[in-house]
Each structure stands twice: as structure tokens, then as C-alpha cells.
Amino acid sequence: MRPPHSRSRTSRPFRSFVVAALGLALLAPTGQAAAQGGGVAGYSMTFLQPTGTGSTTDSFDVWVRLSRDPSADPFTFDPTSPQTAWGLPSDIVPASYWDSATNDMVPYASYTNISPTLGYTCIGSFGGGCSGTPYSFNWGTAPDAATVFGLAPGDHVDFKFGTLVPVGSVAPGTYDLPLVWTLVDVFGTGPDGSDHDSMVYLAPTCGGFALTPGCGFTRTVGGAATVTPEPASLALVGTGVLALGVGAVRRRRS
Image 1: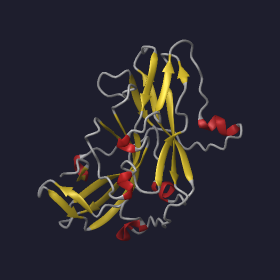
Image 2: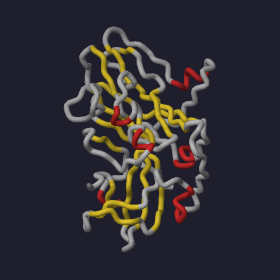
Image 3: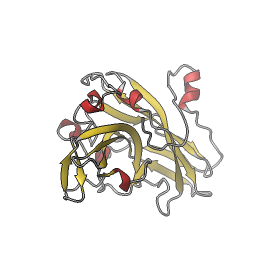
């Protein structure tokens, strides 16, 4: 079966993306990683502020934590060595890409770049800018490759995944965003020298497609505006939460 998000580099815009339905899958690891809901073994992602309240005109920042499990196998990321897949394990760097000309998977002849990026699905009542939904979505900034692959077992990095912005004044109620990802975009060339890229789930929230109940990002809206402190503010009062860069995101090439 064709992996829907393994294709030539020129056929997809260079940006973070939205998956419209659960049936639209990326290249997912096998074995233990697949059993964990589509992510790479040893990586996980959680919402830092999963619940809260606000008014019907409030925007909501979505902060996440990307972690490496203390028992994860260590590896050394070498950004100068694409010929050795940057020293990364095979469940992060796929050996092949989907070739629409042959309707089959074709081995990469060489790798050229690797870049973390972000994605989410349209499921959940926030909608996140999908057609006819009450909230639009402004992307945050994915950590760069050195940060993501430099995490030692037991380490983590916190960052703003994005901001949910109401389209006008929304109806009172409880809204949820259950599933977001940090992904890896791997760029390389085929045997004929053509450019291709593949995307792999690195770490989803909520068990990936398992959608663990009660673990999503939810906000109850209605009444007066309520200010929810961001992780950067919480860090100032001793919680130890680290807030990283904020801004518009697009996939970055090193």
C-alpha cells in the first residue's frame, strides 16, 4: 500500500501541515514503535496545559513537551554526516520512499537533509482551521534537528505548538484538540538523482491514533475572559518549565 505522505520533494509545499482524517497516514514505524500509537520508540509528546477556561473570544496557546524516555537507547546525532543517516536509528530515517512512477517503494541512494516539523488532525471540536470550524490555527515553531535529536534519555524540550484563534465569537462550550505530532521530514535522492522526501511520525499526543481518552487539549469557553499563564510565566515562579521560541513555522532546512 502506498504511504500517502512519501513523495517527491517538489510535490508538497515546504510547510507544516494538517491531516484531514485518521485514515490519512504517514510513514509509521513498525514493531514496538507502532504499538505505541505511531511514534518512534523512546520519544513521547504531551500537552503542558491540557485543561483550562476562557471567554468565547479568547485565543488559546497550545504548549507541548517533547521527551525522550529515560530507558531509551542512546544515539549520537551527527548533522555533518547525511551519508550515514546522521547517526540516527532506522525507525527515524526510512530506507526508501514512495515512487509514483513505479508505484512502489524505492531505496534512497543518498540523504541530503532532515528536519522536524509539526502536524495535527482536523478531528476534535476546535477544528483548527479545517473547513467550517470555529477556530483557526496559527503555527508555533518546531525545535530544530539538533535540539530534537540531541535529547539524551530522560531529557525534554517544551515549545509552543501553535495558537487556536476563534473565528468571530464562538458558541459557549467545551472544545478539544486530541491529536498533534512532532514529525521528521527526511530529504534525499533516488537512484536516478531525483529529489524525494518522506515524513515519519516522531511523537504524537494521546497515544497517536489510539486516541487515549481524556488526554487531549481542552478549553471550556463562556463568560468573562480568563487569563491562563503560559509556561514561560510559570517558569518564573519556580515550576521549571522551559519555554522555547515562538513564531510562524515552516519546515526548515539546515
